[in-house]
Image (cartoon, rainbow, N blue to C red; front, top):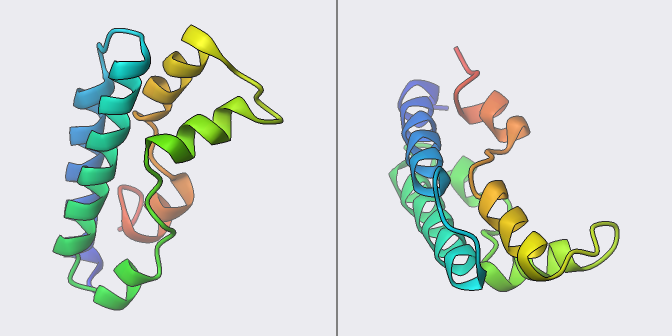
Length: 107
């Protein structure tokens, strides 16, 4: 595996994600924009990974509808502004499991 290069990509991905969702206004349109940007950052990071097999084994990239369904159903049951705010805030969160394997925490 090519952890050094992949770690650089994941760190960059995390930095980009955090700056995108940092101070975003609430609302469905903004939640959708953050979801789309997050998905694009993930696609870009995967394309840049040297370890193509590892990149292909990552979980599918969720779109806006995925996150809307995820947070509007049990156990979350969110709706309205709380739903959109959660989608936006979760757009700043990276997957700790994958960070440990490929990302920020890999040495």
